[in-house]
Length: 117
Image 1 (tube, rainbow, N blue to C red):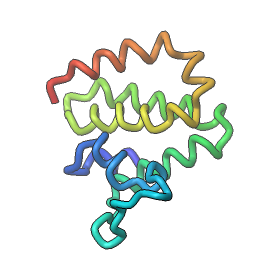
Image 2 (cartoon, rainbow, N blue to C red; image 1 turned 135 degrees about the horizontal axis):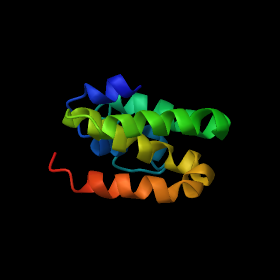
Image 3 (spheres, rainbow, N blue to C red; image 1 turned 60 degrees about the vertical axis):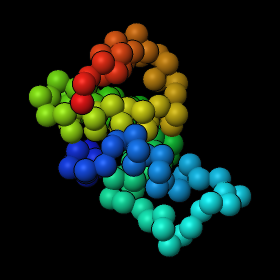
């Protein structure tokens, strides 16, 4: 999943919200199924989102956060973007452990927000 997001030419946040059917309103009048096709990035992020909701948090939260933290340290801007995108993707599904580790997570998120890339 991280590799699909890292190698995408799309913005991590853009892919997350533009094509992911999980965030589309059922009554969205502007929805055109022909024009709105899922991308590999949006499917990867949607899959990670579903996993964060379905898999018990004790199994998914720590491994994903560790992978995100590792990517934040990378000199490759796509790795850093994938790290922050994936951290955002699991935030809702893993809300409880996310809150418990907020003191560790927020400094990384704030640092990433200042990243020029």
